[in-house]
Image (cartoon, rainbow over all chains, first blue to last red; front, side):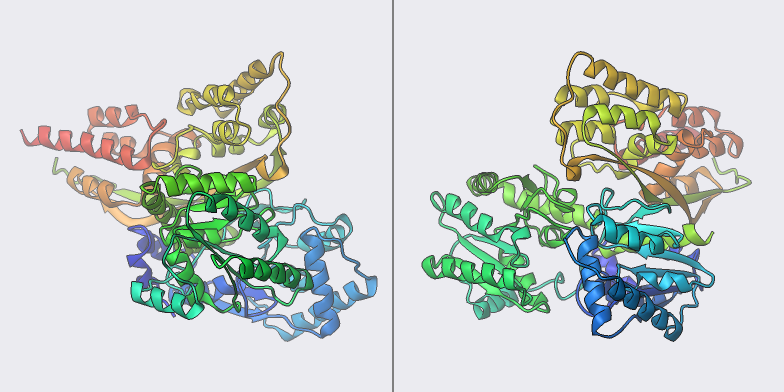
Length: 396
Length: 221
């Protein structure tokens, strides 16, 4: 577990002292975070790192998790998908069950706090049981295209909060409460982003069966159409006519039938072309992802639909230029012509990759600019500042 | 130069807590209408606030509207016209707003707005709340002031030279203290003449330090 002083060697100079000063304004206050689970990425991943640091800063920080029966989880998953814009059938009974279960959760959990931050949709209706303190709904996804019916149902809970927080402007749904913006961040000291020696990188790649005898193009993303892995293969093929490169597609399929079908198609492609490597990795393969990003010549994130997606930030932190699609938070992370390029097509991706390979002096220059950009804007130290400032603002 | 000032100068940093307004523009004409309607704080955020967020290694556009016109709609003529708007040249935010609307009106006269953007690429209006952070650093002499100025978080440079002056329409706190507590009217005037437009906070810090160094040198003679 990292301590706040550990970040002095990676954050911008003065950042840790600034955090210590800011934290003095909320010292002793009780902050409670509520999520739908302790595992996985997103909110849980950030809380695992940020929670202990906030406690170390003197902010009394607790983390509670809601639970329920199968019907509760089924409805919560469907509601979440509908709020993200997918078509789902939600029954009145299912939604009533979800509300009732959160009512039970509210009785079971200790919700006594100065600031209660409820993350994402699963525990959101806990707010009906609020009794003092300030309540914040922290949304980690894009709900600007939520299905109208589910949003209308869900909004009556969110409007009971004092404020909502979104990762980006434009990700919000219509609400009657103040809506703040706190972009997510990466933890530079985590297993996924911490330093690896060249030897460790080589060993991990060898274990994964990825040879390093030619430039590597790497995309790390779920095997989902939203991240366009087939488009990446087509871009690679356009590049391959001019440069002897190897493409690595690493990700998870999560047991989803559509993703499994996509993965099997990609594996067929890899059978035909030995320079295409497809790696299905478990979600906890952080060290492997770290090594792949470090070994890459160019990192790709050619998503066509995305939330914030911190892949570009992870790659830039490792000093890599990123060629990314224009979707969700990617365009907010990649500064075109400075840290990489945003593209709108397969041809655009191939053009930018070729441009970088033909002008190799750009690769370390963009990589260095990317690392500096992440250091200032996308590290957990910046998110801690935003979170503390929100706490100060709400409890003043 | 060794006079001890009462009260001492206390350096304060800040955090810009961003608030999204759920107001969006998907083409130039909508941008013009929305600029005319949003709260004045949003005009402040997208113009003066740009200087807190702008980094030296990115292209300088001067404000968020010009950046959007250049990058998202690719209307470089409009971007150039918006980029040269120096917010510090306007006595009120309403005057600044009016000027921005006039530029857009003039630009759109006789031409259609370019195609509408996808929502992702729209202009999303925001405003901000400034959370002040006392940095525990104070100065009673010009030498101590220089030491503080050299090391203080760059958000303090923004707060003292841009935010206070432009949003609150109060005198630059650096200059006010130099004048009232140290009696350095001439140096205070030079501080007030520093132009924060189209530069970085680190460069402003460098210029302020340069002015203090000259004053200290003159004091020694």
